[in-house]
Length: 115
Length: 116
Image: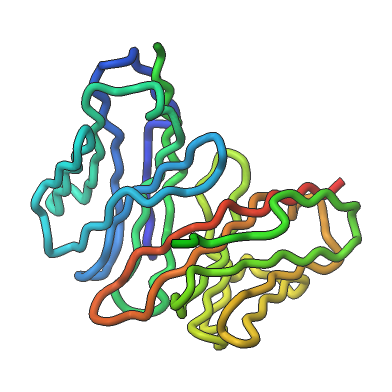
């Protein structure tokens, strides 16, 4: 069975600080996909990134970066120079490569950026 | 480019009533998913369609729940004899035809159900 753990329930940082959101996953599959979604107060889940299990390269997109480490089953997300607009709930999710590809989500981390 | 749309956005109903939600996926997306999200939790998978075929249902989907996608375009989720425990956000997502690998699911704004 698949499982995603986001141990940080809530994080608050002052604007312009860097912040890392942790994600640990469990799966028996050798091929799988990892995702991060952002859920702002409006409620709609916004896709941020998808990473497959064979690609362990770190990725950077503007102020966002992701660190994927298969050895520790982790897929962490860092926001550099945080801004108030980054305040949201962030979800890490996992899906299999075959089958219906349903997403298994973690419980989310609520990030608050203090101006 | 139009995203996934869901209607209504909010629904308040009394216990025992039936409710129906609608989801319109991104055009040309043949795969459609329903999830349920309760307060403080991540979304949980309910069911999945590929075109008009419902290929999987979660054990969360009791007999009171039914979903359809009659022509492979929009989908409806009906809850019969609602219970207070059904209060949640119901999210719909769609993804394009699978080519080689798993693709990204794009979510709609959700329908928030409150059962009194």
